[in-house]
Image (cartoon, rainbow, N blue to C red; front, side, top):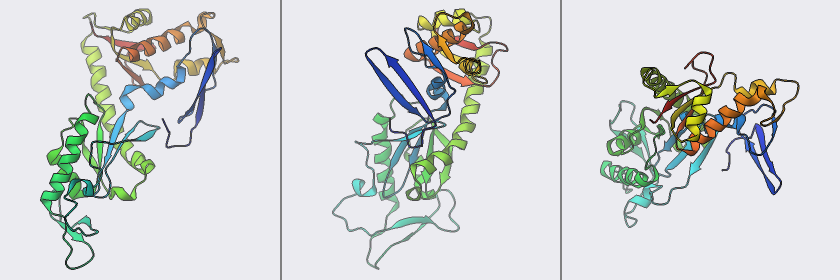
Length: 307
């Protein structure tokens, strides 16, 4: 993955037969572990499933889809999706270099004023815009199949209003950013989208926490680390909450020595189990929430089981 931001941290995984180095776009605590397996530790924050989101930037000149989280963003390459109006309309038709701008009195879905060169130029019609954005929406069906991340729309008002008419993605946010997307870099899109996404994610996370408590006394939830660890290794964890304030490994890194020999020191056994439970949950297509919200007091983990 090519990060779009300057990296703030570094993670190195060393083995006798080779090594892997990753630049991490978030601050990292200093920590070294030695053992027969790798530790994800603080990097698990980057894999927490509740922070992922999508941005769809709409313009007549370019359609851009981006995937991101709190700290990173990357553009998704689109192959079977028309990425400009030119791709969607009849190339035989003469066309002006036009840009749609909402009229001063245009509300949502209202009329737009078009500006271009030449009195004889043909301007964009509503049915052409509808056809273009319908092709975009249809093309995104396969790209977004099975996806559940919230999506934020960027674009001028006529584009946003029309796209909502043809949208087929269930997780499109009601809130959108009305702005000429052509004028925004991928970093700016990410920065402007995150506050909208964060508000939605807080709400979703609170609902999942409520579900955890509603399943009390059913055998489907636990905050006992040993039980959660065992269930995770068996692929039974549907949702795992990890205490992230402070993160388990951050407490370890605050000690005099930030070098941990795995399996050797009982002081770090809980951190190791939390790490292994999180990795096992992700491998089994479960969701991991790194949250500072209180789920169960005085526990590093809480889990909802599949059965």
